[in-house]
Image 1 (cartoon, helix red, strand yellow):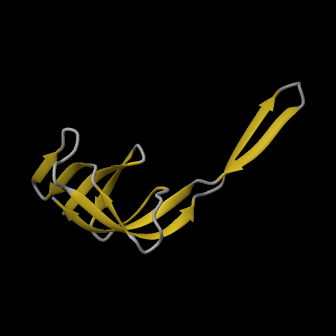
Image 2: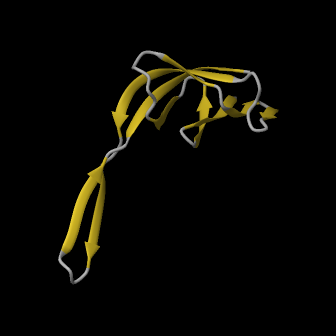
Length: 104
């Protein structure tokens, strides 16, 4: 089984060929290709390459499927005995990717 660990937006994700992945929003339209150059680890069966900090020459290419919104989070601030209440919400935008090829 071939997989790679990539870095995007300060977070690390495990990628396998043919799998879908949700990362923080990328400025790419749906249907376009995106390439991850920051490959931290590359594994193919028993062969494992660990980068210091990245694996040289390794790339992961993916196709953008859609830009989606995550679940709604409720943020509620409250101060007791002062009648102060503030309720807001947040929905994070994610980019859904389909991993096409892991090269390296």
